[in-house]
Length: 269
Length: 354
Image (tube, rainbow over all chains, first blue to last red):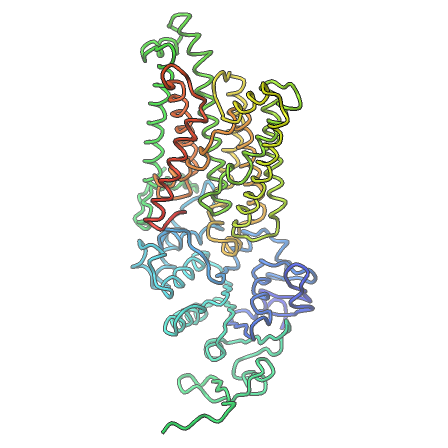
């Protein structure tokens, strides 16, 4: 894959917190126009990788490149017009309304003398329509359900109008219905032409929704590719230490991971 | 130029003023709060100018103001009352802005220079000046400013690279405040009774006898602070969504935080140096502003309310009890303390405080 096809790349990067390196010599290319999901066991470095991609962590060695240039050498507001980020469990200020929060996504397009243009208004309305929250516009964010709230945050990131979206565990703390709702929304955003990178916990959801998977373990990329190619019993065992069988998802035909029963299951009378 | 009322954001109905490619958004409720508090401020300032040991009345104040009053009236107004009034206004505005900045930075309702140790740092500076040198008001003020600034820098260096929530800033600040309070107590015990009296008087905070020179100094600090806050306010607002979201939106998080802390320290230093530590103004002003506007974003209202509290407290202090005037800081302390208790009770009822 050439640089022109990957808008976001990690090159020979050492990433970590303080002196503790989580990943060393890491190389990742985020393919353009794909819905990439990073997965792996707890503490494998997947959220750390996402933070490095989002320029929240600066590699102590190597580079993160956005459009071929070091992301830390570019003005952060310019980066924010290319790259949107939904952090893990974001916090809304008390009492803020849905429309107000979504409008905050316009920050990188605004200035002291350009506080609220017609374009801002249109884009915020579009972002709320796309996430199906237009009816909630006047409600307080703290009154909403977890699934609605996550859609509001996604709308805020959409209002940023970036071709690239990074999502750090967007489904954590949601019940299954809302998880699917958020993932369906992500799939729709991908179909509309955006490049998505998400960290997910659920292997089967990753296999169903992703078009490109990055499997990590101990800070290194273990396998990478289309779900149909890399979700195999052997890879799953290598990444998660989980003995399993793979069957076709009866709904979508994507791989479905069935963990092996370790002990014989007692027969139900 | 066009103005549009936008119903899109019902949480904050606003008018957008547009001219060419420029647009400014004015929330109706914030606008009402600004106008209302300004009106109250003007009324109190006029009352303050008209009353005192010699009651002038509004007509004589006006005559003296436009240069048609008697020599005596003009002296009372231009030399005694207006400098004190102007100093109080600027000091209050500085404290209101400093408090709003600290609450924004710490994302904590108790974030204020009193809690974070800046006031104690200013006191240490002033005490060193009083105890070690035979300093007058000017030197004491300079030492107080240095003390506040040094404390601000100390807190920043101790919190660098720490918890981004601002919680750490509050805890470190409380620790620094406790240490400085100990040092201040020690300094007081090392002094003569005459110096100790001067020190305690300074510690109470007072505006009596302030002249134009001091008013100008605080006004200059205030102007610089306002300019910096105008440039910072959007970034600070985005930071309220958390460090990660703010980074994603393109805010230079560390830079915004450092500059905000420096600006808040300078505002505190300027105000405390001239008036002494007027208790609770910086804590209460942003809370009252938040209640009036329904948003913690309004620095303008926090500044006006700060000025309002100090001016009103000073007017009460001048009126005094019986025929004795009170130090201004006594009044702000009593009023501010009562307000804080009320705030905590209201907080428990509503369960919301931001």
